[in-house]
Image (cartoon, rainbow, N blue to C red; front, side, top):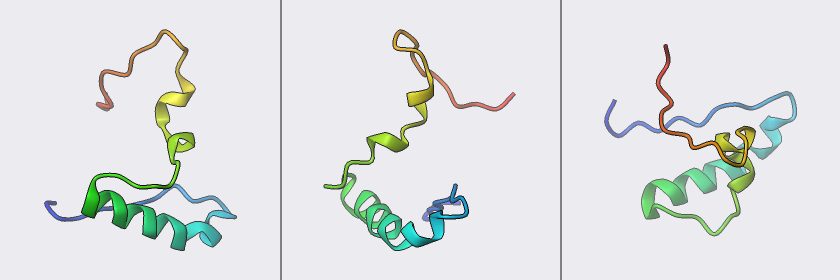
Length: 59
């Protein structure tokens, strides 16, 4: 839906970081960037160094 942003993926300890994620999500939605380093959440971190992520399509 246009205009809807969802942030998910919290584990048992994730609830304590929800306010920080809310601030980061607001930065990303409003400014397109954030001063907070969020690179550790990049899903491509699970890929090999020579692998390019070209699609997140579900089969």
